[in-house]
Length: 334
Figure (cartoon, rainbow, N blue to C red):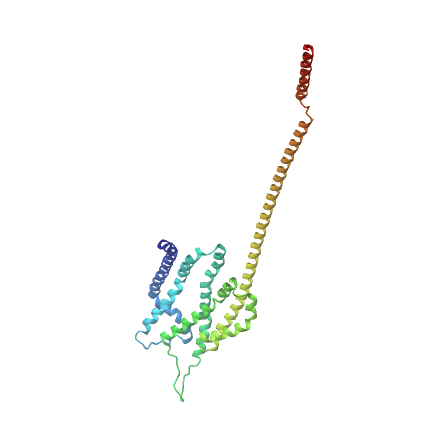
């Protein structure tokens, strides 16, 4: 019993050990990139602040109100950048762990999505950085006023931590939304959704896209529309990808059915050959039996036509002749 339980646990332990090794390499890559990014943290933070700096001008500033705010902000920036840089390593380790358990067609099906995931995430981050942020910051800065005799001036004094939190929220929101084609295409390949069902629910998808954009973005029309429109476009792209996936799956199933039909025909052909050979063998055996029967008939015919032996008749004639001689001798003696 113990040996059987050990045999059952060994593969599980091997998989867990391999998973531990993969996660170790991924975490190690994250820490190494975190150290490198923290060394260049001021440059990275300057890159993230640039859209706001371009709108505010060179004479403006950012503030912090807590002693540890700038330090933890730099730590967050370093970790944020390290996640971007080490993402290929993490995805590679994940693929190395999962790929041996997949079939060849499954590996070829998942490989494009493995490359498309980080590319789409970067595309979403680039869209929010180069297009949405400048428009949104201009919109928010438009509420500044110089004041006058009737009131005080209203001027933005942006906090370092709050600005970073807003930027990270926008980048992650756009990056995750750009994963919609990958998610829906995989669901279509698995047969969970179809292109026709996605097309029928298009109006609900539009409403959900605007609600999702309103939750993830700041409360301004520019950011919400800037996120909702790409989601709708990506939804349409997902419908096209689902249709292509369904066509490929139908073609593959047709080829498999054709191969199965060909195997069935070969099996039937082989069965017919075996039946033909069996019939020929039976006919040959039947012909041998006929030959044997003919041989027996010929032997009987020859036996019947052969001349019968004259021994009984000659012995009978000799006996009668001997009896006549004895009778003659007896008469002569009298």
